[in-house]
Image 1 (spheres, rainbow, N blue to C red):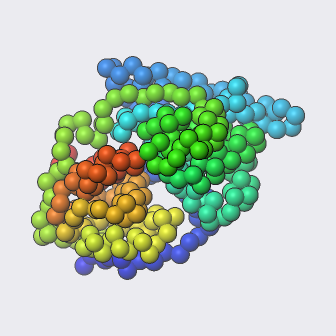
Image 2: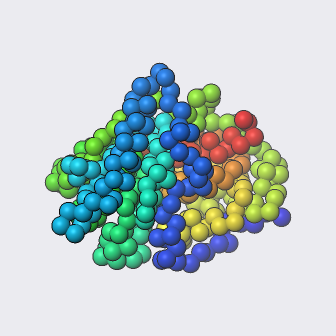
Image 3: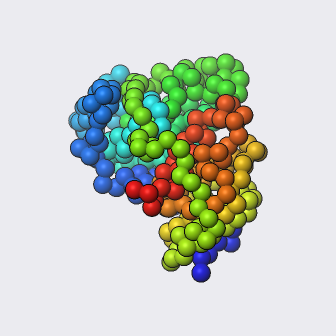
Length: 334
C-alpha cells in the first residue's frame, strides 16, 4: 500500500546540506561528451567549447597562487554564466563542468545555497565553501532584496578566496530581480553580480518537450493508484500536499523524498496563492533532481498556475516547474 508525503517530517541535518551539494543523480553520467549540440543552434557548440576551455584553465590555475592564495575563477576574475531558456541543457553543461573539476567542489540550486546560509549562518557558509575549487549555482534567480544582497556578498567573498564560480539562469545577470521587487533600489548589488560573470547564451527549444507540445492527459484516480503501487510509492490528495509543504522548510524537501520511488497526486487543481506556488516550484525541482515519476489526476499539469501568475514576475519559475512536472509525468509515454 502506498505511503504518504504528508506523514513525513524530516529533520534538518546541517552536515547533509553541505554533503549533498552535488549534481542531481540524473546527471551522474553526463559529461561534455554526452551533450549533443543541436546543429541548428550554434550557440550550444560554442558553449561546450568555452566550458571545456574554462575547465582546462581552472585545472591549470588550481596549482597557481597569487600572494599565497588561489587564483580567481578566470584570468580576469570572472566566472561563467549560462543564460538560456528551459530545457536547452544548461544544467547538463554545468554538471559536466563540475565533473571535470578536480578537488573540493559544490553544486546546488540558488535556493539550496540560500537555505545553506539560513541553516549554517553566513560566515560558516563562507568557511565551508571558500576552500572549494569550484562552486556551481544552478537556476540563479533573485526573488527578494535580501537574497540580492546575500548572494552578492557571498559570491564576492568566495571569489576573493579564489573559488571558481559558474551559474545557470533563465535571466541575464543584469536583469535579475526585475518584476519581483524594486530592483532599481538594489542596482549596485545586481551590477556587482553581473560583473562577476562572463555570459554564455545557450539557445534552443526545450528538449523535454521537443516531440510534444501540451501536458500529457491527466490519469484517472485508478491509474494514479496503480502507478504508485510499489515499494516507496506515495499517494496524496494534491491539496494535502500543498498544505503540508507549508509545514516543512524548503531546505528539507530533498529529505522529504528520501526513499520515494513514485509520487501520486489526486484531484490536482489550480494554484492561486503565490506562496503555495513557490513552495510547489521547489518541490518540483527536487522531484526532477531525483527523477521520480509523477502520476496525477485532475487538472492537466500545464494548467497548474493561473494566467496571472504566468504573466507575473515569477513566470520563469512557474514555467520551469511545468516543464519539469510534465516531463516526470511522461514516464510511460516514451
